[in-house]
Structures are given as C-alpha cells and as structure tokens.
Image (cartoon, rainbow, N blue to C red):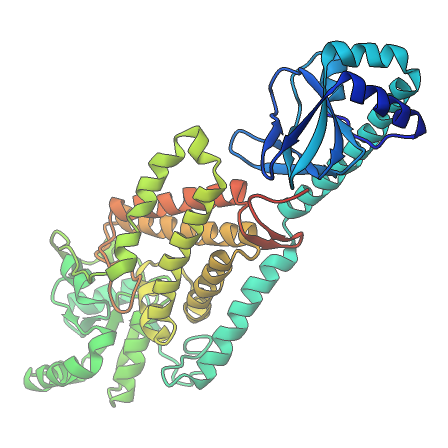
Length: 479
C-alpha cells in the first residue's frame, strides 16, 4: 500500500528542490490522481488542497485509508519497490501538486538521506497502523459472525410470550395442552377384544378421522364421524342408531387416532357429552389395519386453496437455487437481501393466516402424525408467532444469521413432515394457510428445499444493511 506522510524540517529543504525538479499540476475536485494497480511513474507532493487514499475491490467495495493535506506526499512506495500502485488517490477538493518523475525522485533520495530515513519511518508507522486496523477489522468481523444463545432466546422467547398473551385475549383461544384436566376419562379396549366384538357384531365402529383418510382406508362396516364436522353430522349418525334395531345398545368403538390421539379421544368425549354411555377407544390406535378386515381405495388428491401472493413467491426460491449455483452470484450480499425479503414475505404472510385461528392450525399439525398430544397446541400457538417474529427480524436486518438458522430449522422440520406424508401416502394439504393449502407433493418439498438453500446463503454471505452486535453495517463501509 502507498506510504504517506508529512515532511519534517529536512523535507522542507527537499521541497525547495522539488520545486526545481518537479512539475506543478492542478487537479479538480473528484479527479483520480493515482489508480490502484497501475504502473508507478511519479512521486507527488501536495502544495494545497486535500486528497483521499483508498483501496477498492473488484466488486467496488471501497476502504478509506487516510486523507492528506498540504505538505504531505504520496506515491513513494511503488517507486521504491518497483511494484504496481497498491492504492488509489482522489482529490477531495481543488488540489495543487508537485509531480516528480521516477528519475528525479531517485536523484532526490540520493541527495537527501534525511528524506529517505523519513520515508522509512513513515513506512514503519504505516505497517504498525495497518496491523492495528487489520486486527480491528478481524475482531469486528468475528463479532458479526458469532452466534449467541441470546439471539435465539430473544426471538423464541418473544414468540412464546406473544403467543401466550394473544391466546389469553383471543376469542378462538385454545388450552396449552389439549384435554389437560378433563374429568371424562374414556375407557380403552385392546385390539383382540375389539376384534372379537367386531366378529360377533357386538359393537359399532366409528372412524374419527377426516373423510379423506376414511375413504382411503377404514374398517369394513365402520361409520365415519369426523371430529371437525361433529355438530353437522351427529344428528344423522344418531338417527341411524335409533332406526337400526339393536344398534342403540351396542358399544361404540372409536378408532382412527394419530400419534397425538387427537381425533379418537375428542370424538369419544363428544359422544359421551351427547349422552351415549357405551363409548370406548382402541388402545392401540395404530394397530387396527393389521387385524381388521379393511376397505381400501386409492387416495384422492385433496382439495387445494390458492395461497395468493405467498404461493407465487414460494416458486422464486427454486429460481434462486439455480442462481446460487453460479459462484459470483452465490457470494453476493445483494442476493442475501433478496433472499431475506423473499423469505420474510412468505413466512409473515403464512403466519398472519394462522395466528388468530390456532385450533384450525392444530388440526393441520395433527394430520402429519408427528407431534405428541402434549405438544400439538403449544406448537400450534408458538410456531406462527415464531414465523412472524423471525420474518420481521430478517426483513429489518436484525440478527439475520440467527434468524436464518431458525427459518432453516423450520424448513427442515416441514420437509421431514412433507416427506413422511408423501411416503405414507397421506391425503393431506400442507396446512400453510387456514383450513387448507396446497396438496402435499414433491413440488412442495422442492420449494422448501429452495428456502433452506436461501437460509444457508444468508447465513454465509449477508453483509448488507445488517443491524447486529457490531452495529449497523452497510455494504460500502469505512474501516
């Protein structure tokens, strides 16, 4: 890099000789005097005005090194070493310079050892200052890249607090743990005993699942009474019981529950509440397809709902995934901004559609058959708020690396759920918005994989308009 400095008493004498040797030139404000990377030809002494010395990378990131005024000089390092210019110099105001050629500069050094010693001193001081500046920048960059538990506690804690507070005042609020403290204990029955009752026609089997699951596979002769449509379908179910001789006195065996036991236990409680006495649930909620005769047919594609702008935005990650394959674009901090805004728009949009109707989202969570009973409601309350909070953090550039890891974790969990649903041929929608969404398929997996890749890009290369522990960082920052 070019060494720069101000002359001492010895150099003032040298300056007189420069006036005899050199050539006086004037440069206007903003003019480039020396360009980084060019061959050295002249040594410059500033008579009046001010200049700035800076370095510039290939993608035009500028790092200011210093500003020089009247009496200072620059350009000596490249002439001494014979290397290309290591920095650029630009006039900050109208400036008058003495321009000395390399041959004249060599004669000047030979005739003025004091000036040579001063240049050496300036080079040494510049090296020390450069080391200190490098250390400061490295520390700064390390602080920016550090992840703290506080970042995650801040985002997840804020999401949890907001979800609990809003749930208290929400007309559609749900209990934190579904069925907690319910006094209506539902008796359970084993598979062997239930099979005997089935063979002897001593029980009526009622499937509590959604109609799409029931149509795909159910026990032969069973009735379907989905929990979510109970109030609508129960009158017809009750009429059927009263009209069929002997059915009203039979035991109602409710089955079809998932890992959360949400459907069968809820339906059994509702039937009890309607005054039906002989209601039991299958103890082994997942074992009935192995022992009972079944009626099966190919699963129909579930209905879908247009996701609007968010649904269209979901396709963009697939395009961005292709862009990330190009190395120069992959590392671009400007691409990180695009990824941040895009992910924020998608997750905020989906979050707002679920926040005020947690019970509906809870049923979508149950469909994936991955969440235990105690976790369904908590997950349904906290996840939409986490999507909203983390999306806002990404949009505003706050703790973006931590926010990207949380968004990425959400995508990994969702991808696991999607793949599990596809492999088990579950006739469900994604549950992204409201009651329905897009059908679960490999296209949905591809979209979320694209979002995951975007999170990785943000984690590695986001350095533009970021508010972090190191302060607010712009792309073109001064060091």
